[in-house]
Every structure is written in structure tokens, then in C-alpha cells.
Image (cartoon, rainbow, N blue to C red):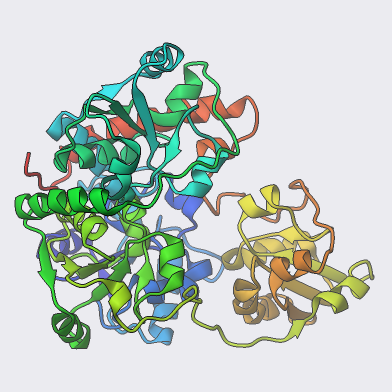
Length: 532
């Protein structure tokens, strides 16, 4: 069913559950999209939709740029049809796509994770979050000043590049661990991330929690540090330690006041079960502890969403607006701090499960992706024997970024699952087409699609994908010599750009983030809340 822009505008403000989904690839979505639209590319729909929109009768509106493919359909139409086939029953398509939205006076945004990024700017403006420049911080470090630099990003990002003397302490871990690394109330605490959002939210979290120290955000994060001409450290691996008894006592006392100030509710296990049994509402269950803690033991049905990342990229975890978000941890500190921000972001039903998850029946390990349907396949050893044979081609449908940076099977082409006709024009006629991806799951989904485009070829998925190829000891090729379409399937972060291009992209990114707050004033569909 088609939905026009005025109707969608009303739906966005009626308070009922709604998922606005953009069917374009992330790199295309990045250029221009609706504020509330989560990116679920048609090429990955089966893998992403179940977790993002778990209730199958949720009201869903698909959008795109309105352009039609060779079949006469838009990506949004194709996505709605595919979702319908998979059992999602309440599908709609935005008439005219984002162009129709803009023509009706709607605001369009560039970038990714826009609600969270815009919220960060809102927080800085609303609370007056204090900050320090890179030059000021560098002088203090050189002078041996009494400071502690806490990096609020996940450890993998921290290892990639960090401020000298920095200590990794991801977002929701800050209040949980700060007393282990900051023991003197006179010490200046500096919180940084790569850009702005997590620096602002992290430092304001410590301020909201009542830390007696002066706390500042590093203006523009590691990007601002590098743009100011200072060197970052690579491969650093220093993490804030687990909190001891005294630290826990302070943190739990602090979040009790945060919960009261921001009206953070708590629910029991019985209430959790009642909410999960309610088929009329969407209930997300997020474990906001670290990945290691999650893997050691978590509730069945929960997803790992470390608190800082859940606030930083909410649309990647929960695409259904006005849903219930239940946050889980061990002592309520990380869950409460995360909920306090989610409530201000507009998630009114973000609550804390009032129990130590470790005391419940838990399962260990990672949460595996839902299995996809089987497809004709070929093993790594079989492909190795046939790779150089005439009439055999390999098409990698993983991301262009991984194809470039992590390498690919020698001689393989790169393409996008939803653009297989473009791949056909480059690859040409073959007797055997082997489809691969990072772990082989997306490749299996692409096989029936590719069989329609190469009707006379034997189309096979590589069992285990590139990961299995690499683990078998086979060589990976670098470079980007055989693309079949534009590499706009994902957004390239400033640090993903090589050499001299990186500073330009850093500055553009920071300029974009700062400007978001001005757009919010023009958009009546955005309602952040503050208790400043």
C-alpha cells in the first residue's frame, strides 16, 4: 500500500509504533534520507530485518530515491514485496520516495546514525557540556598536568588510533569504571571519541552522575587532534579496569540519583515476561554490558548492545519507533545511564530490568545470525582446484570496504546483490559463477537471484565464504580492480580513506555534525527531551 508524505508525517507524530526503512545501500542512503529512516538495504534485508523490526505486523514504511530499475520497480517496492514474502504483513511504500517527502516540505539529512549524532549536538547546546581543544590538551600532556584521558569508544576503535596516554572506557562503562582510574578529585577528566557524539555524551554522563572532578569533552575527538597536527597512537591496548567494591558503591549511588532525575523505570522478571508475551507491542531486550561479559552469560532472546554504542547508533539496533526497550546488566549502573539518554532521545519506554543478569538462567557464547536457506555450494578446496579454470568466475557480494581493506579471493569481482544485472554486464557469460561474502550467508541468499541473471550458468555459494577461504590458508588479494558497480554500498568513515584524502573527509564530517543542530529547528517530527 502506498503512503503519501502528509500521511507519513502524521504517523511519525501519532505515538504508535512505526518503522521507517530505507531500502538503498548505506553509501547511497548516506547522501540524503529521512531523519527517522533506518537503513536496511534490499541486498541484506533477510539478514537485518528480523532483528531490527522483530514484530511482523509492525507498521512499516519503505522509502528510497524513487528511481525505477530495469523491471520498472523501485527498491522500496522490491523491499516491501520481499518483506511481505517473509511474513511482515503491514508494508507500505512512500510515494515519490525522499523526493516526495521533500516536496511536501519534509527535511532531508545526510550522514548515518543521524538521530544519535543530532542528539549529541542537542546535548552540548542544551547542557552546555564543557570542552577542551586539542591544542589545550596537548599542552597539558606536555606539561605533565594532572589529567586522565578516557576514550569512550569500543576497544577495537581505540586500538586503531587513540590520544597519547588515553585509556579505553566505552560510553556506558564510564560511570561504572571511572573511580578505578580517577582517584583524586582534583584530576581533570577528559573524554574523547573519534569525533564529537560519544565525547559529549560520555563527559555529560560523568557530570550527570555527579563526579566531583572537572570533566570536559575533547573538542572534535581524535579527528580534531590529528587535524591540529598532533600524532595519534596506534595499537594501544589500555582498558579501564573492572570496578572494585568502593567504585561500585559510588556508581550505584550515583545512578540512583540519575534514575530519579530522568525518571528511569525498572521492571521485574515477571513484567519482562508479560511484555514479551504482548504481541501488540515490540519489546527489544538489550544487554548493555561488554561483549566479553555478554558472551560469558546472557538471557535467551537478548542482544548485546554495549550502552555507549546503543546511544551512538540507536537506529542500527532498534528500527521500530515507540517500542519498548528493556536494558540488562549486572548492577543497574550501565543500564540506568543508557536508559537516561535513550529517554531523552525519545524512547519513552526505555527501562531497566531490576535484576543481576548473572543470577538468572543464562546461555553463553555469541548470538548467531538466523540461518538462511541452503543453496547449491562449493567448498574452499573445490574452488581452489577450479579457480584458474576457463569459464569460472567469483563474485564477492560482501562490502566494498572489506573487499578493499581486508582482501578478497584472487581474481574475484566485487558487486552488490541488488545490482546483479550490473554485475552481469561486467562479468559476462560464464559456465560457473561462485558467489562469496564475508561468512557465506549473504552469498547463499544471492544464489537464486544470480541464477535468474545467469540462467545458463551453474551458480554456487562458497561454503563459509571468505572467512573459510582465509582460514584454510589461502592467499587474499588486495586492491579494487574488478568492481561491477559504484562502491557506494557502505559509508566510508573519514579514517577509511587513504593518505592525503583523510584530513579532508575528517573536516567535512566534523562540519556536518556541528550543523545538524540547525536542521533540528526546521523539523517538527524530531522531539528530543532534556532535564537540563
